[in-house]
Length: 296
Image (tube, rainbow, N blue to C red; front, top):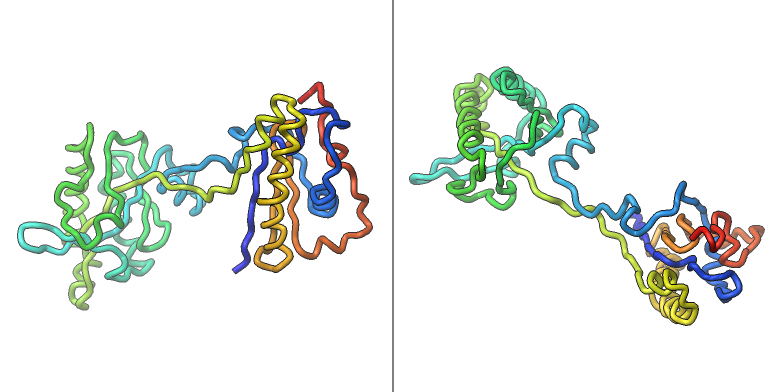
């Protein structure tokens, strides 16, 4: 599987006079031979879009399914089987049963007919992964599905200010599904019935790229000595390591992102680009898109 690395270096093009920035052959060659992109506007580390580190699992699912605009708010709503054990109910998910697209559609149609009056709508991401579209943000806390599978659900239904409302809806879902013809057919075939829907959400982390911040403050201060020292350290550690991975074929591509200072943009490097001998190698601060010092 191809590996792609992104290295983010705010202050790589420092807020220093051109004459204060020494020759940096390794970076200059890379920036000249790679596929360059100048961002439309100067960006700080906080403004860089890929630095949005967390989102909600429900929102991520909706985006992946291409239905983000179908509802203002979302909850994950996965079909489950509840196994009676003693006085409790044990939660089982798709790992222990299958569900066809036809069955998923039939179950959701009846649920949607029942909850239409509340403005709730069940959407399919996959037959065993659903979303519930909501008109308003629910005031509840939930337990992620994988934290409870194979365990008693007692104490793990929706909690919070709207606890009563959402626990009642959990029970309503069970009633709608209890005698559903599709569940009757499943039971007759010896399959586990879909006896409920687990409502949940959680914050999830997007891929976090490596950020080198050691050049950031010297650049902002205009500290030539400090910036050069930080640059030398960067070249001897992070840059040397990832360039070696690229040469060895461990990496498919290496993306170097520069933010703040006098330039906001990126260059994408691959092994084949080292043969681009015809491209003129420019001094670092003459890279297209570098802003005049007074504008940085």
